[in-house]
Length: 367
Image 1: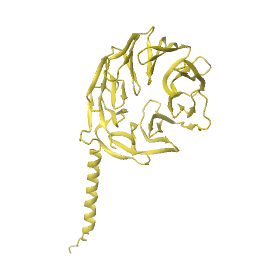
Image 2 (image 1 turned 90 degrees about the vertical axis):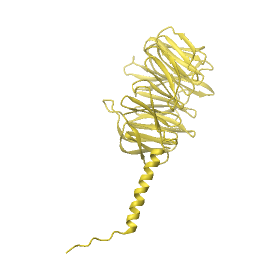
Image 3 (image 1 turned 180 degrees about the vertical axis):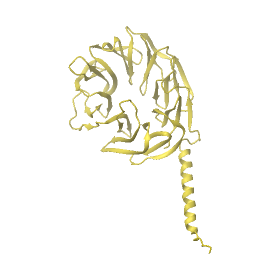
Image 4 (image 1 turned 30 degrees about the vertical axis):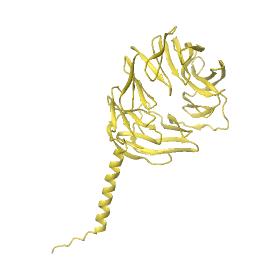
């Protein structure tokens, strides 16, 4: 006896077809979201282990001899002969570079040196601000001078360093342009970090404080306040390094502050779990803090890197990028044209700088 098969509902078949079509359209839209022109990415003639920084919509990198500025379309804007064992730093407006005793202030538009001089000792590192630059000069890590120069290279101020190790220098605004100096003191019974601030227009120190034994790794400024992130918490200070007791400390123990970005005048702070003991970093959760929001976002899979764009958080895992728009709680996947092994940065117009083994790419991200 032949057993009859049940007739399939035509409505069920139509629904299944519509579902398959919707999934296909969604996939096409996600792929096309990378670029209105269909050009999803460009390869950059750089290596992942080279120093690469984002400069607005462009990137700047050093190849061991020259510093290059590359547009997000992959076109080289200029190259500067910096020499061997050189390094550089960019701000939103300026680029500084150095090699041994030689120090340069570069014109971002042309790549020409507007200042080029030999310092009185080896340049340890330098930082660029809006109107000023700072360069730490000394033969030792804990002895030397921090020189403050204007945009033309004229010396404005000097801070003597003796017995403390400068960790970082930054600039912020408070009527005029101010500078902060983060230092590590290793001569006490336990290492401690100190933070000093300077009014560059008035040429005076405006504040100094010992921050304690926790390792401080990030200082940043927003809306009249300095924020200091260490391995335990984020603390808010005014420009005199007086703690703002009206702004509660944010506990971040077990988390690492990966990035900060101001979006529509609101400060967004992105955190990832602390790296493993071997330095490895793959994670399935990220933490986003802004306004009154302090939220943990769960990723569909372990990721190798995460970035904040102008409209969303982007996480990378192999051949996929996961997008979570600000205000949402979940990530949407999109296919990448390469397998990401390292995440290096993001431009202002939302091009990610990523590596696939030894190749570096600029990839237009979904919006």
